[in-house]
Amino acid sequence: MKILLASIGTRGDMEPFLALGEKLRQWGHEVMYLFPAQYCSLVPKVCISYAMSKKFVQLVESEDGKVLMGGKIGFFKKIRSYYRLYKIGMKINHEMYQEQYDCIESVQPDIILHHPKCLYPIVWRLKYSKKSILISPVPYIIHKVDDKPNLGFGKSSYQWWNRFTYTLGNYGIVKTLYDEQTSVPENQQYTKGELKSALLNGQMIYTISPSLFQRDIQWHKGVQVLGYYERNKMLEWTPEKGLIQFLQDHKKVVILTFGSMVNPDPESNSAMIYKVFDDLKIPVVVNLAAGGLVKLDNYSQNERFYFVNQIPYDWILDKVYGIVHHGGSGTTHSAAKYGCVSLILPHIIDQYVWNDIISSKGIGPKGIALKNITFEKLKTLLYDMYENPLYKQNVTTLSKRMRAEDFENELRDFITETT
Image 1: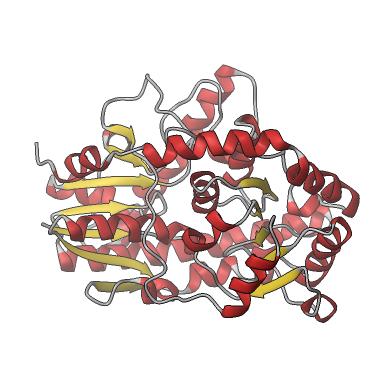
Image 2 (image 1 turned 90 degrees about the horizontal axis):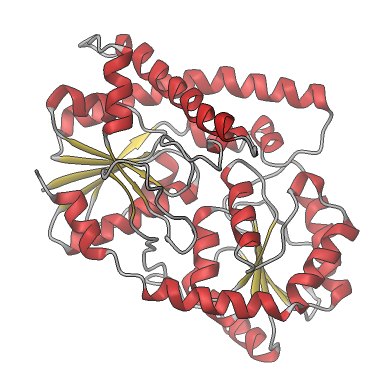
């Protein structure tokens, strides 16, 4: 079958689709990708990729986007940034919806697997009675959970409010779908009720380990939690000799990474975090990645620091004690899978949820938002992470359970069955 995988977001939003694409190709299907242009280079050379606008990623990396990711600025300036992001974001989402329409109508795949930010596949499913499946690497969206609110609504202990937040979140999706109908040539007019039904009754896969997040019994059978998948990132990567030597010289190393996250003041944040590591005499591999962390001269010659620009987690994580990170879904899963104690410094939305999950599982201390960190708070947390033996015991047990998970047959049947 011809299967299109469509995603919008940061680098972490592409990875689940790349991993699923590897599986689908192994099962003999023709796989195509629809990504923001910045990430089309990640697509295997044997596959076709279609590029959407660069504007969404550019917005995330803009000065206003950096504020959202962890800016320490005044309340009113933050409100202005949020308002600008909303206004510009609406225009970009409109443009990308049209790009999804153009690609999908041209390609006419048999099946679409799509990120929740990619909405046209829901309309496409209604239009052609074909199969589209929502793929979510994050929990608490679309379908109600009594004890947790929708991802974008913070925290609450009130069941009625938790359930209502999903109604509010889904209303926004349905309204967007309804309004966007006039932006494409057919100008079809599905009612809001039809679109809501398509959203709630459609198929959905949470690409999350059930060891971290369980399926709710009140969901219909078309919504499943079918495990975490990662692609082989070491095919075109080899470690530097200096890195191998660093890991040999230090027995209890921590890796520090913010992945694809950016922030308004990487120099100041890096300086504070590095000083904590230095004061505690903890050897650290710093993954500079997208620029949320930077290399500073006064630490580049420090024997306890090793800087890399990119590093495959599936290579490094089983060689280190723990990881301090932003709390992205993929990083959180990889850390747990490879038995690493985690300390999360969340930047945005789902990262706060993963911070709660890590803490509740006892595989790391409860982290603090990047925008709220201070030297003393971080020092206390990092010391606890590094010296509390219970975290390592718990994550070792969890790692064994995650490595034993095998949902490949269920995943294949769920995606490709035609009945």
